[in-house]
Image (tube, rainbow, N blue to C red):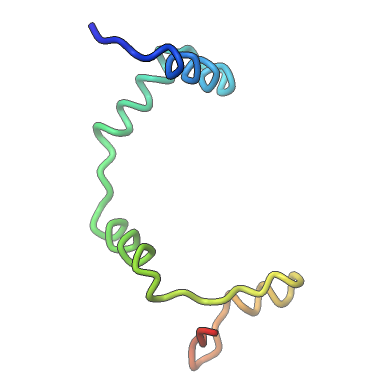
Length: 81
């Protein structure tokens, strides 16, 4: 048996209700995810790269066409501003 703080239990109940799930199912799903979902080597490398911010590019959000062009780098690659 274990105990949870009242505030945490209340928050878990809210989140479970929002997902239309029982509290037990919601908590069990979270625990299963934490206990058994280990990222693979590719995911770990991507997470490390994202943390290092070594490969950031600028995305143009001014309009749709500019956005798409900014996602497809020219042959020389993106330039950091």
